[in-house]
Length: 126
Image 1: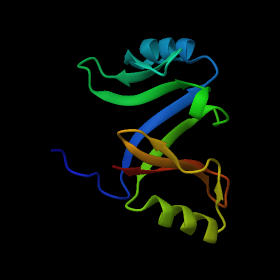
Image 2 (image 1 turned 135 degrees about the vertical axis):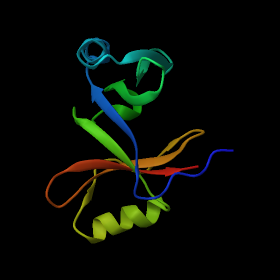
Image 3 (image 1 turned 90 degrees about the vertical axis):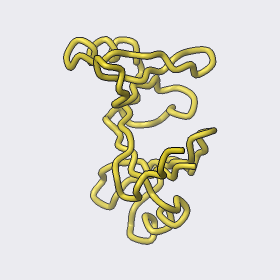
Image 4 (image 1 turned 90 degrees about the horizontal axis):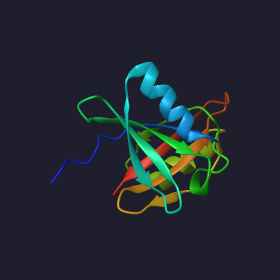
């Protein structure tokens, strides 16, 4: 059994764009990442990995649960209690960009914006 990620650490990076296929190919050529399709039902997003297969990020279509996310690299920061972190965000002048969403088998996340306008995701692993 793997250990639970430490709260406050960055656990993942995603890029959500309209045309994930072309951006997948861009990063494959520019930084050497290899793409592994991840079925989203009627389309695939991509887990991007190093030449040895180590996953490092995702490139996603702006569809489904990713519709409306900004086209920027989005870091996911591990938190111990997503509801407490969400509440603290709003209490400190931040905004929710998405409601808390469940990622079946993985955990829950939401996208927030800090008072200065920067965007990131909070992630509570299962």
